Image (cartoon, rainbow, N blue to C red; front, side, top):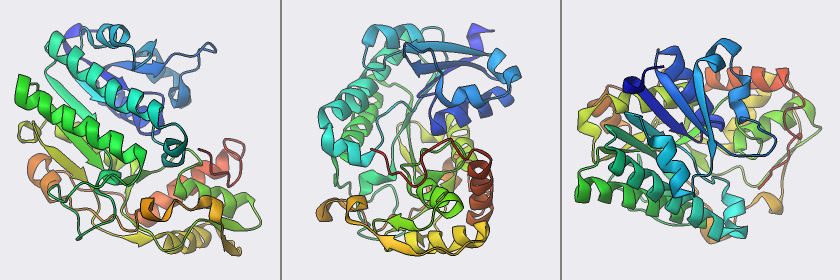
Length: 328
């Protein structure tokens, strides 16, 4: 494995991270996959990859909050894709200190290690949640940031530190801001898997509200966006959205998924699935104009096609997640 072309992916065992590792390996890159250390030695969704791809991947187990481990992981890499984060919004109400430790301090560790190791490109993962409920739509990168949950607050902080490292130290940082990514391997705590598992295997569909609007990006398109932005010099020092510019309500997602599954179940709104009122983000609909201009990126997978592929994946893995269980 050549040190000259090695890339590091943090959060590699997670949903988007595992797809990114797979995409980079298939494109011929040498990949070091940073996974969270665990005594059982599991590597998350990377274990779902074909053995041929796993054999070509270098695995690094550590803790993103440990500066020494991060420095060791970064050493010898020319590009870093930083995806490691705590992402569950409900859990951020319970454990905000953990979100600061991982999302802010962990990102700082990555940036400092990349500066010390003179990494050529650093891509830091943001989230559309930083925008809060849309003041105007489609949401472009100039939209005000609104911290409506501890999770989004820590991501706003991580994004700001990332851009500051470009301005203060000339670190070649790109902040990638995907809207709502979905697809195979996503946790059942996310809205689409929650609906799919109940539609496939349950007797009713329980949700928080039918009304929120989201901009859903299929995971393969998100991965393609990361890779395209890594090649784009004009994205350095900037935030770039990855979005479809097509909004869909949770209620519409339920209707589409039930049509694909071929079942019609009663839908019940439940209080335990609702956020605190001032914390609910009611509309996220993004602009991808700059992604097109900077990296010639635009989404390729339609919502219906992406939903069909996601339903097929969950259908084949009936026991992968508890049915309809919205876990924090």
